[in-house]
Image 1 (spheres, rainbow, N blue to C red):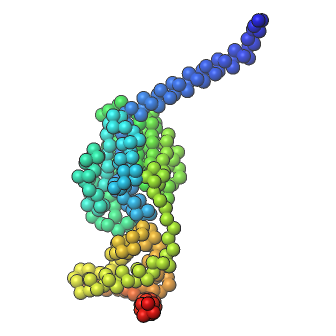
Image 2 (image 1 turned 30 degrees about the horizontal axis):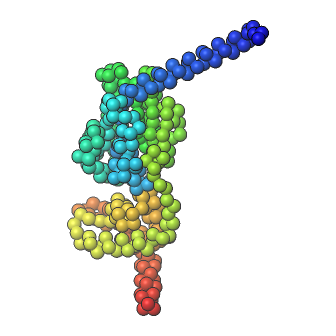
Image 3 (image 1 turned 135 degrees about the vertical axis):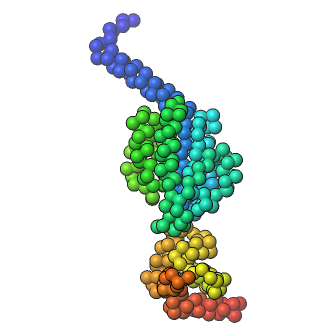
Length: 303
């Protein structure tokens, strides 16, 4: 059989394919070597409050498939992770520290300002996290991959710095709470909703108006006359989250809707001589509650 000599363009094509395969193989080898030395940094304060507010999802969920820490261990492997740190003001979140330590999480308690409202709360977790991440590049130069878990865009500067240092950066975040450009600063990006198998529900706020009014009545019955206790915005939000078992975001929307419709309102009071605002049920709200009770009694009588 006659063999036709390879043409110059055929030689070039084969050379390109060999070169491309070699480069891809080297890149794959390099990526796998990077993933053999991993550092994980969790802005836990931020992640906890965001997931609870939007989805009523505790990151340290009892279901392993929905547990942030269990899933990160499964993703990167126990033999590859060199440090796994979670930063938060642990006095402000519902966290079982013993349970976290059993998962080999390095707890970093960072005191905030002691305030619990979203507008007033301020902590230094993200700053402490960034400082530790930078310091780790000098302490352990073998770390090739840095994993950042956050819910907002505060991690952009540290992620950018790590890329300049030729580190692989992987990001876990909540799209609803972060700017889209944060994804430009990572080699791999994961949506925490998908990673933790969070089920998003639709809520009809009208269904929660009467239960919310009943919750306010119950709160007043329990706390009426107690010193230094009033139904401000934080107290009302916490009471409704607990009573209605819906995310804080939906509770905030419900409170706003009820105010607009004149079902509840705020009045000025004084606590220890200081002016405060307290929610109460308006006459319109009381009428709705009364009508609900009358309708309920009517159904019972018919039965």
